[in-house]
Length: 128
Figure (cartoon, rainbow, N blue to C red):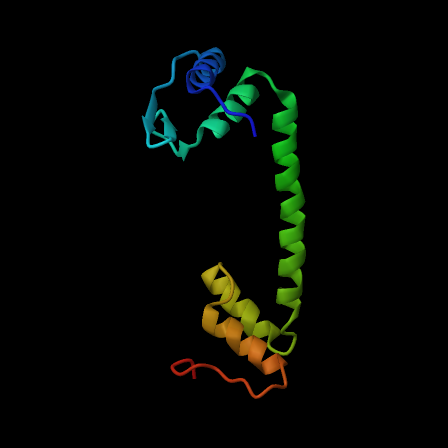
């Protein structure tokens, strides 16, 4: 890992930001973290990466969406088996999902998992 020159990175980022957005950013530094326009605190290396993206580094822009696109199908694949797990109480589970619009609660999920397994496990106290 190469050492970054703080002044050079901040100057590059300021120039790239001004070119992209038409105004100078306000950069606040505190304890090795940098906040751009009061936003999320980031490290100097992240500012250098953002400067490359703002300056027109197309390779960095294309790499980030590709990673997000790969993670989305993996999450969908993992979620699909969980939904298929309870065919016995399909209508009751769908009714609850339709009402709340968010999915199963923790109690409902554990109840389904324990009903599927043939172990001696049981629900914790207060879940009955």
